Amino acid sequence: MTSMFNPDGPMQSLHLEKRKFSLYHPDNDNWIVMIVKNAYTQKKGIEEMQPDELSDTLLQYTVQQAYRMFKVLLFADIIVT
Image 1 (cartoon, rainbow, N blue to C red):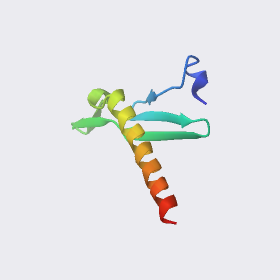
Image 2: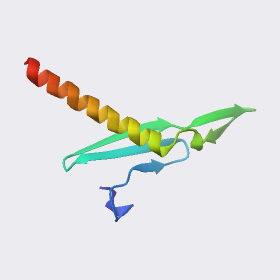
Image 3: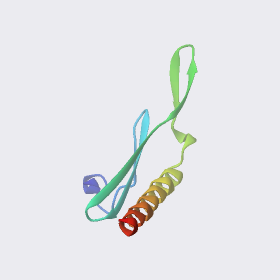
Image 4: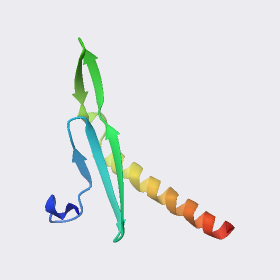
């Protein structure tokens, strides 16, 4: 999916004006995407975006941790049932 943006490997982030996308490809069949709205300040009714408030490293770590928790909960559900 992301090879058109980065032919050397999987794309991990995408920056738009108001949002950041953090992508994680844990295996061949699954993609996990986390979308975060950029921080902003409002001056005289105008939103001024501050896209550097959240680092790509932090977002990538968060989405990877979410996937790890998903695997733990899925495995725990298999054991219980």
